[in-house]
Figure 1 (cartoon, helix red, strand yellow):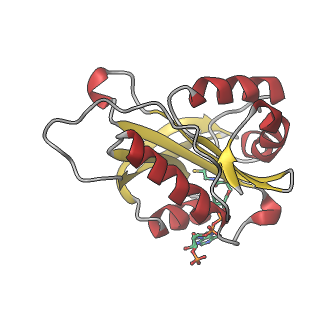
Figure 2 (figure 1 turned 90 degrees about the vertical axis):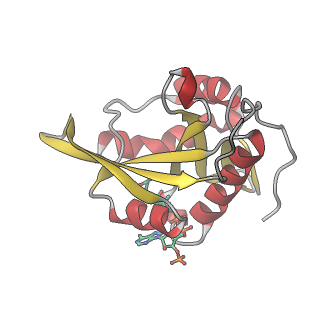
Figure 3 (figure 1 turned 180 degrees about the horizontal axis):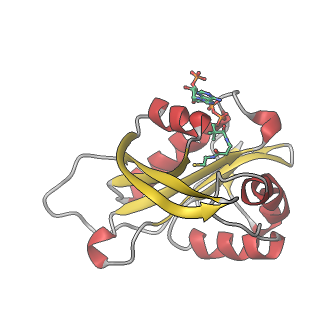
Length: 181
Ligand SMILES: CC(C)(COP(=O)(O)OP(=O)(O)OC[C@H]1O[C@@H](n2cnc3c(N)ncnc32)[C@H](O)[C@@H]1OP(=O)(O)O)[C@@H](O)C(=O)NCCC(=O)NCCS
């Protein structure tokens, strides 16, 4: 089932995320956060955004969450989104299910756009985002230095809902029951 992340998921989430910090350039983080740091991130993010996990009888197959894109007030209707699926679980529709749930929750909270930052090249992630309806809108050239080289990062945009003339402020995430899969 897909459900909101809890503190007890932090160790498994840290273990899914670690290789993308230490072994390659998928993440621009260079030191993988430990379980305590991931727990703190879940707690902070969950005040404002959904952090979802795909829980298979206690095994976390993958996770996706939203976070603040920029701090200036006029950006408050947009969110950044992030997703990681464990290597044993990829290619089975888990990413699609997590993002569909995440984007629907963001829509019901009152967000209008979602942005995914992808260090390129990352063909699986680029194809995945485009298959979910994200469109490439910007490319930062040489914006990060990792593993001995300057790296480009692209930004993909998803229109969560049509723009309205007087948007209400986004609401906090609802602690709704998990979605059965
Ligand atoms: C990108 C990622 C989240 C996709 O998750 P997933 O569960 O494997 O994806 P799904 O099975 O739901 O696939 C949905 C669609 O994405 C595309 N896709 C997924 N993996 C792909 C791959 N390796 N190559 C090309 N397209 C791919 C396909 O269009 C697929 O649709 P289909 O099943 O109808 O062919 C996953 O590969 C992953 O975690 N990668 C490592 C971490 C990462 O790069 N995260 C993103 C950081 S920006």
